[in-house]
Length: 74
Image 1 (cartoon, rainbow, N blue to C red):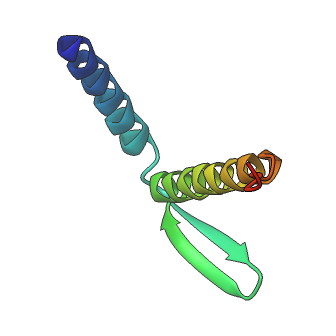
Image 2: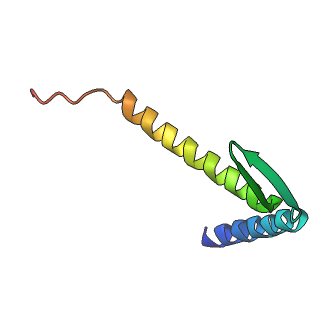
Image 3: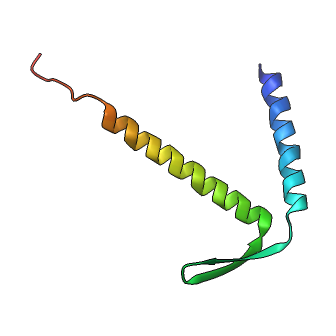
């Protein structure tokens, strides 16, 4: 199993390097009052990371809200 994880990690690393190599051009991004000029690969990484973090946080809070209250009278 460890060998499979190592191979999968290697494949993902190669794919990540290809994506970075193909997206090195600078892009201008306007957000509200800010203007950022970043490499496109970095912008893709940041938006993906923020989206993943928001998804985890939302699912965590929704899962906590659906739990029934604990009855301490028993």
